[in-house]
Image (cartoon, rainbow, N blue to C red; front, side):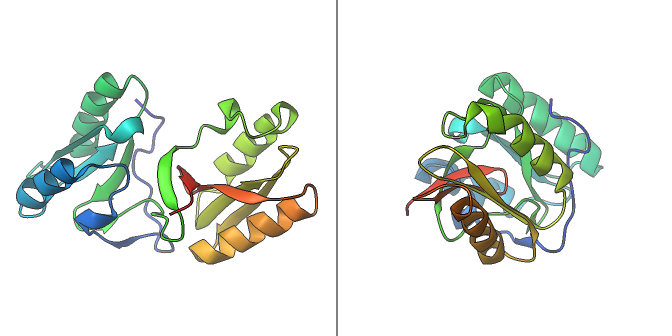
Length: 183
């Protein structure tokens, strides 16, 4: 199970739910969400894990119970804590639109971030609980962070700018909780 709180509401990152925007899922999973999750009654949540593991439910009495059930099931299958990405009709985590989601960021274990920089990245991301966050790295693995931005592009621009001051050939590796790559 991930640490509490399981759901963090932030108007800067929330956007209306659309099945096509759920990252990491295959077409069959999207079809299942469209046929079972979308018409389901509230309260409903979707938990997402690495590799596209996901669990959802609908018609649960409380947000806490819905989230707990999905996080337990998803974590048991994925082998690592999952994340609540949708509550009712809203994405509650930043969903990147500029780059393709490839997985979840684990900065402490990231092979592209210089080992001496990882703990600082983890700490700064943990402190940035509102708005959009992005991480960029250069050829030497020195990270640049864009934290608490009002939108995705602002976070990306800030991360690339901070990286360029410390490293060369910078590129964005994460937006929100997700690792990203070219579309």
